[in-house]
Image (cartoon, rainbow, N blue to C red; front, side, top):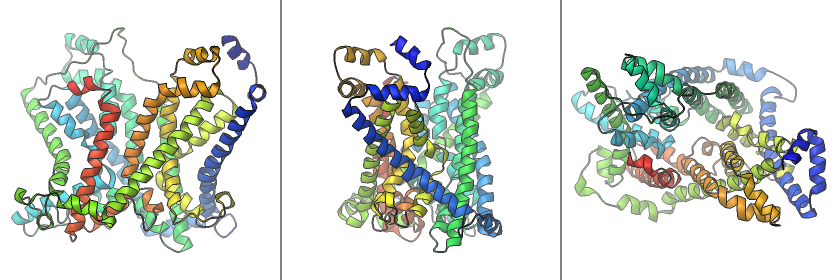
Length: 592
């Protein structure tokens, strides 16, 4: 095997390809040909051609090269205001989420805070509900007819009931909904801190603040940079929060793209295209920065034997009390929407309308109504089917791709396949959705001369595309972590390549593949950004349905009850999925 690799290293990619083709059996060549056709179609028809068509909409409006679309953008007050709002929200969100996210990790992992286990569970609630569902929960608490606003009006009758609207409301909601990455990645980085270094600094007389600033935080910096850039991209791509609590004065790029794309005029669609292009360029730039940061490497401990971090007691009693108060205020902010959603899901419409809890009226009527009415449970079934099928399709495509890349690494075909499937990583969801929407509003020969706009299949394509990069990155890591001795032993015993993959390789990577599929299912179940562009009018997804119900939250108690039931069922499903993915494999984590 070593000699074979050494010989291959001295050959060009074209020579290695010719040798590989010469060694193939007829059956293997047919399989490779089928895979090539499938992946070429996926990459070209679903990604490259729609994006090129989108660029044509921007630069070749009217058939010749023109920059008039950019002039239209500059003259559109709505579009320019949306751009300005997005570039205001993104940096400020990065700061607020960074402050809150770091403090959450320090509270749960570094400082000795009473009730840290309970606090951690509260801070992790954003993992089981998010997107439009989370925004609807905050709106139910703080909106014009929300619980808190209703209570405040009884004390201050002249108060502005629309106080929770605009930039401040969007920033507040997104600050507490975007700390999930900190609780996952920054928490893992915190566990890499070497306690021996902390002890050495303390023995030399360093203060707690100095140790935190000069010893602990430098270890967290690579992960912190990465999650900050991801937060910046999230702020630029914000959609649900601006739509539901931004009001008329604070709309960002994505809601504006959605509005322009649904207009009938060509000028409005071209404005949507140029806005998505600007958003895509900004995303590419930020991802390039994040990649450069990753390549710089990580801060590492100089200790040969790391010691697990021991939680630090805050020595200053005043600071200790203030930190505890801060920790539990954050806990209340995180858990109150969840608790209210669960409780009001059992309440009747009268008490939902008045925002009052009466335990004597609790029943399962709202759940019965959802499960018995076709119009109520249909969006739930639609989202489950879409998410399941998309997760399975993505898993199959990526497993085949990774197997090919593993066997023929550094070849022209493997490089094209890998980079092709990673294209959606560079593009925001709305840009991908808009490109599909504009490209398939008319028949295309490579789609059997059928227009796909307004069909059930187009949203499935969108779901598959946006999940390819994450699935590719994680599955590829699983393939390349395999022990080559397993495959060599199987081959030496006379097993064929397909048999070896089916009976030796696939069972080893199956847990990883299933975990990734579960996470993909979880995130697609509550999707709104892609669904808002491509859903079938008679088969709305759960995200679209919840968004429409949330807009009528103040006047439609039946709709509110339905929203709460949707949210509870989604939280149950998400919680079960997270337990299956993380819980059983991290029992020590749960026992802490």
